[in-house]
Amino acid sequence: PFVSGQLTRLLTDIAIAAKIVNHQVNRAGLAGILGGTDRVNVQDEQQQKLDVFADRTFLRMLSAGKSVAGIGSEEREEFVLCGNEGRNGKYVVLIDPLDGSSNIDVNVSIGTIFSIHRRTTPLGEPLVDHDFLQPGSHQVAAGYILYGSSTMLVYTTGTGVNGFTLDPAVGEFFLSHPSMSFPERGATYSINDALLARATAPTQTFIAGCREASEPPFRARYIGSLVSDFHRNLIHGGIYLYPSLEGKPEGKLRLLYECAPLAFIAEQAGGLAEDDTGRILDRVPTNLHERVPFYVGSRHLMHALNAC
Ligand code: P6P
Image (cartoon, rainbow, N blue to C red; front, top):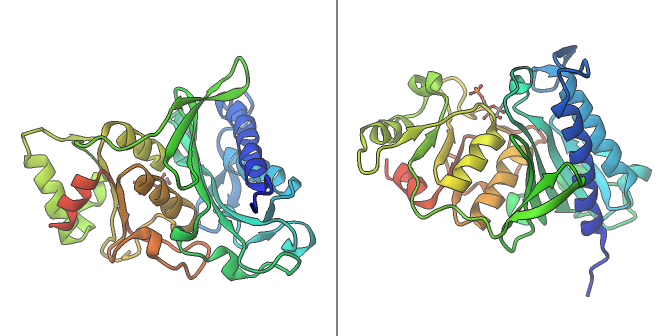
């Protein structure tokens, strides 16, 4: 009864922005858009030209619509309030406009991750921080775009996960992967092996167990692009770990626009997503760029990790 069409409009705008970014990603080597800028983002990482392009494209597209009151982006230190101090628009969006950007110059797949929440302040009032700092369990929708061998949009609104593949000839996303879910079994683990010695004991024990397993033997697959590793594990079964590290207990990945949206998708697809204390979706954020340890994937593998 309260449907206004704003969420549909918002998801359509995300799909349009994805097509624009996809076009640039596919021709990055030709468009003089490879490489880094002379700027460093809030993560203290050199901004790649495509990072900046993707951030600007999604923000322009989302702020032009009437559905979004504010946006939190990996590329920007502060929240961005859309028109009139965020008084209008039912939704706020948290986004990693181009994740895995270290792979851009070497032509490895990269992705966009987005999370959509309903504002908590009443329409007509300016947005405040807690409109953005909501637990992942409050998400209205979450998804990712994978700029890979094909370009896919995968998202959930809380009733399962569906995958859409872009047909460049038509310029439209078509439903190619209905009702996506983790397979019952899976034998792939994804972790940066160079970090393992600094990881906590349970992670080290779990990975040692994977390496010794024979029925079935495990595969190690790590692309270094979260969306790609997550998507492969969703299709074939598997687990991705970016653990807490000695000297870096919070790990690397960001709660609001990487872990929480992927956790929503993972749970909707029959998997699990946790940090060192429990369910990612229960975690209440304290700031826009908060980092958390992240373990996500097939239920049986997450249970095996928790048993370590
Ligand atoms: P590392 C990319 O920078 C990213 O945020 C994720 O996409 C990826 O899984 C991870 O970091 C890679 O981090 O430390 O293994 O290079």
